[in-house]
Length: 217
Image 1 (cartoon, rainbow, N blue to C red):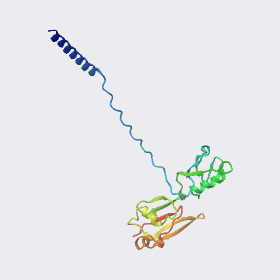
Image 2: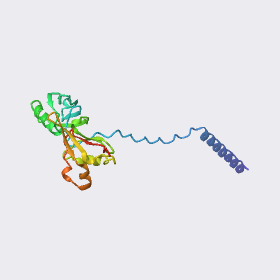
Image 3: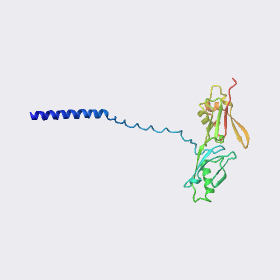
Image 4: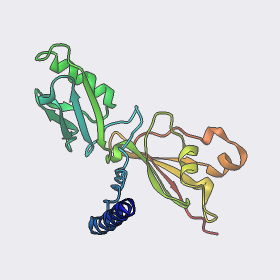
């Protein structure tokens, strides 16, 4: 009898503990969901890149870095007179030079104040038409392209998507400024494209404009 009573009491105790456990679990706050993964950072626009032989012109923005001299590292515009000014380097001609040429010229000046200066010039904003060539008229994508050494007529014709069906190909011309004067050179694009006349694949200069006129017929 005693044993039966003891077993009954133990059973009631276990039932009470189970019920209390369920009540506690129901009242307890639900576990927090795992933290959501942070979204990957959105990449910004790619930095502007220009060829190593890019020719600096008025309106360009230049980032000048002087190694171990952050107080001399600045961003400066190329003024309309073609010059730049930075700490310790005043009124230096930049137009017509490549970034590396300008960096070496700046090192020469800075050597009077800084021991073995090392300068790096980066084009932050290339906007000068001096360092571009243009193709306009009867081409599929008229545009301005960055100049690079060795750039030729066929290069920019292909970059523009080719000629339209209305192009007067053999009456194309290159307009170039020489010593302040405008000089025009006829280009027989039709012979270049259809007959392989490589003598018409003329090398271009900074500032050149290739004009492809419309046929009258």
